[in-house]
Length: 375
Image (cartoon, rainbow, N blue to C red; front, side, top):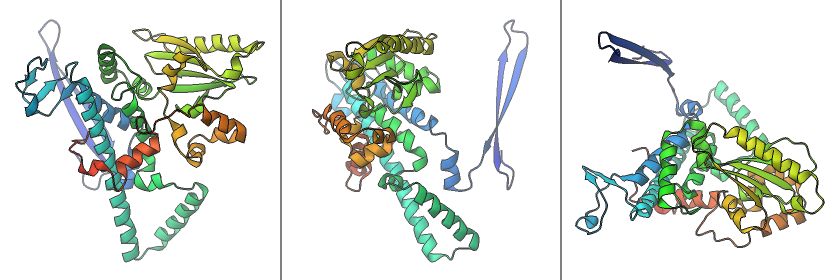
């Protein structure tokens, strides 16, 4: 229900049920008020950036288990473990990767559609400004906006995708390359199914942690304060201890220089990290597995594979995303990037490489047969 010229719309839900004794019919009425966006900018600003990627991610994960598309070439094949009900095909172990690839394709199409609509809208806005004269209020707003833009320089990404949803876009990139949709870190079919099932049922904050791990850093010689850092490979500094949580796994990673002989702080900080993670996960079931890792060990790939490969971006983009890199010397930056010299961008593209391959003017997503996650 919406009144004329009202800024809000009202939704009312009625629930009726019988009590335990079966003698009384109980009625509950729930009324919810939502603000109405009069412009597209108001709509984007009113979006909850942490909710959007979880909703899209759940749809993508759901499609990994159930495909809405009937594939005639699969009909009649022997050995298929598929149960057909209308237009739903339940995923079997053999078709898991096929359905996952379809879900990744659908996610790419969704990102392309959002980017294309945003750029089209921006072009129409610029054309309207050149055709219609601006009022004094609009000119003052434009001046204030230009001042803000000078203080915070825009990148090409800001013109290709809504800046208000930039963090949501990064979460979708993490989900696409993660164990629920992507190829790594490799897991068995059963573990993958359990993780997907949890993702579809858990609360919002836990789902965000499953899409991209929460990371904190501790510096040797500093205080025992856990500083949040972005979940990317360039956060693995030699003189830091990294604490990570992706809901089902807990990690404590020690840099090379922190485990040097004669360092009395290292063991104390490791115990502090373990207590921090145990406190965060004390109410979880099943209990997550704790991994104590050191740089250079083969098992440290368990954490590295879950981090976005920011080392694949240009140095300017790396610094813009992670300003703390500016505190490192040139030699330290070179040594940090050298850790990831064995890197294949075609198999695991960085965030920007993936985005421009999907949303660029020559993107294959415009010709893709995938179906948007919003449809």
